[in-house]
Image (cartoon, rainbow over the protein chains, first blue to last red):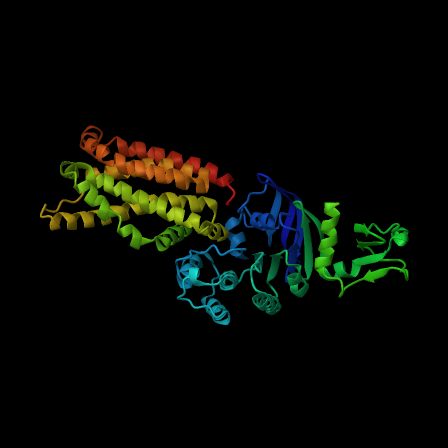
Amino acid sequence: MNILELNNVTVTLKNFSLRNITFNLQRGTITGLIGANGSGKTTLIRTIMNLYRHETGSIRLNGLDNIRDAKWFKDKIGFVYDESYFIENLTIERNKNVIRPFYSKWDERLFSTLLEKFALDRGKKVKHLSKGMKTKFSLAVALSHHADLLLMDEPTSGLDPVFRVELLEFIAQYVQDHPHMTVLFSTHITADLDRIANHIVYMRKGKIRLQMPKNDLFDRCTVIRGPRHAIDRLDGLNPIGLRQTGDTFECLVMEPLSAEFGDLEYIRYPRLRLEDIMFYLEREKAE
Amino acid sequence: MKTIWKLIWKDLKTQDFKLFLLLPLPLIFFYAMLQPVWQAGAYTIVIVLMTYFLLAGNNHKQLDYKFDWIIHSLPVTRYEMLLSKYAMVIVWYILSAIICNAIGAVYMLYNQMGIRLSSLMELGLSLSVILLISGIYYPLYYLLDKKFLYVNIFLFTAMLFAGPSIARGIPEIIVRFPLLLLPISVAIFALSYRVSFLIFNRTRIS
């Protein structure tokens, strides 16, 4: 069942635009939004949150429109942005007190549990928190009103690896324990999604170029390497990001292979990672 | 309506009162130096400056921290956000009037000048002036976003220095147009709300 539906959404900014964005999120999934810097991930998330207005199309959450039903729409969303936008010289408690009244289903007990779990001190001013602690505070706020959808824009950027893994594991576990929860997670650190995502949406130049379940993506993708003289074996395979260097070639193929040849090297999951797939997709753009 | 109250409460909670409570002291000292003027229009000017400082300070603090991003992401409509900002003008005005009168009274008592609180005319006039100023302020604030900070500093400085001259003219204004200025200010304030709404409704939050 779809929880979030974007249909033909177009947004025009000064030097950038999102064009004809259409995709759905299914309830209970963790979707990774990937793409290089400037591909439109953050713009898309901001558009969903109605920080940017879309000119065409519609954005619906459980049937609620993000502009017409803005209030109820945002009541069901938890958000974690790439930076902390809380009032820095107020304490965690006072920031929470400002935000809490706006949500219809704020759960103080859950908030306290999350603060305890994240080892956050209510009396500490936000300016005295580390980047990781600020992200955890944002996450605690985002989860404490029983949101249906958790939107996260680059939440792990700038965090050290231990913190990142801890955060990702927490999110994965939380979604497992709360099947109503759906997560849309933008990142350029694709290793994060290798760990927790079920679906992948790949963006490039303001358009969605690819969207599918992560397992299907890995099932379909193969990196092929081989000697240059064997390049004709790629006929009919639609190679992506083909590069020929010296005597060798390499490329990504995103369709089932009817035959395999002994003189070529085939790299598949688990050796093949999301980062590799994105690398070839981006290289295709460069070419 | 409930959300408007929550937004008003939010602005009150995020205001840096410690800093702003200190403002009336130098202002009152500054205007009290102009003894003949004090009796007539100093309260008006001090209340207007104080209100403007509270209003602009709070807005720019939220802009600086990008706290408005959080507010925009909460279950609040743009219409409610804007309405609360305009309602806050009145709230800051009432607060300023109370604070300035209290500090003014203490100052006069200390200097054995006899207590004189602001008259109804002065309150009405200061309300008119602040409605006019915020009627100009908000459309510019929504149009220029962060860039408005610089315009704002200029505006505030100009108001501070123009204050004494305006204060001298205040008794005459009160006598000549006792009931005219307030309705005009309210009309401009209402028109300004409409203009701000048109701007804000199309703005992307950056």
